[in-house]
Length: 543
Image (cartoon, rainbow, N blue to C red):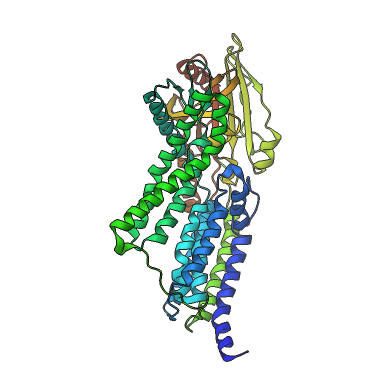
């Protein structure tokens, strides 16, 4: 081995060892949730989202490929001059990445852990390649954020869907086509065609991919950050325009050539959205290049080689610090796994301590509750300490009046309970709208039980639809909250502040709304009046 090779190996092996320590942490202590995706590996959890169509993150593979290409390209434009000061930045990034991961593990949010992994990776690359690799890697690693599954965009997707539908209907009316809108459905007055603008047509999936590509285009064309951000922001209205063209095109094709032609156009219109949005982005870039010629990215002379040995420094001390921190994180994750599960809950428990108490079989002389079994699919995908209690209540004087009541109680793993919107759509329902509603109760000091109510529909054939109202809320030993976001925030805070895993119950009631929302809400209230005191405790009551 030559002296140069020996020097290169001396500076490279600490980075390889740090990378190995980080890999072991993220592989074997990377994921705190065992429901749905039963793995301890952060890499498997993240990669699973990329090939699972339900996650709507299949563009992750594209983002990964682009990030690797960007890193390789950036290394050719960065100075190869060694800078020992970057070792401190590398150490800070690796320790910070482990700390962020530990926070994500503590609150059972794997997406936070992924941010920690990206930060740790930047530190490892910086230690291995010095300032050259550090500058080259920060944007490609930040670009990987677009490959994260972000389910919170489902809410934005609903409103995007409604805005697209309103605009498409308005354009059709201007063209003399009297298309009728009912919620998310569009149909002709004579029944010649009918379409339901489903969530997949809302543009959220294309929004994530197109914003990523727009940011990439801005990054490759301009040096100032404000211009890069401007291109990113322009992708939002452009995506809206693309989806309006998509839905409007379906209406026009169906009006001229019939229902089947509209369906064929729909199958190919996704490509049209990409063409429109990217075309508008490239047009904007070309215009901005003319207006701000001094801001255009200039190709710098390529730096020879892919890797330059960083300056010699205290890489051995960095390695020791990272290995000790990684071992500490691994040990602390085990402590978090052993957190005591809170014994008191917001609902009354059955004798086994896992399931909620059995719901009443009768509500006075008006309702009879029929037992509804938990499906094998639910048992398989949810953690084994998840509890259930549910019944279908049928009015004795009119069997058509029915109310379904379900209580799901989480165990140690927060994934026992998820956003209700996911399972609702998975069961074939389409969410039309949602609103806040307070049910009456004697279990809270102010007499109000805050809940979220969803208007949902399901096709019933021959163009008809079954309308239903679905209400839900979450309760633990201290409070009642009406939304999934509030539950997640409170649960994370309790795990951090009190060092315990709170058991949350998810309560859902649903009834047919064919006779109107007012009558449906009255039914829900009547069933809750007879069941709430039997299964839910007064707010703030502990065992």
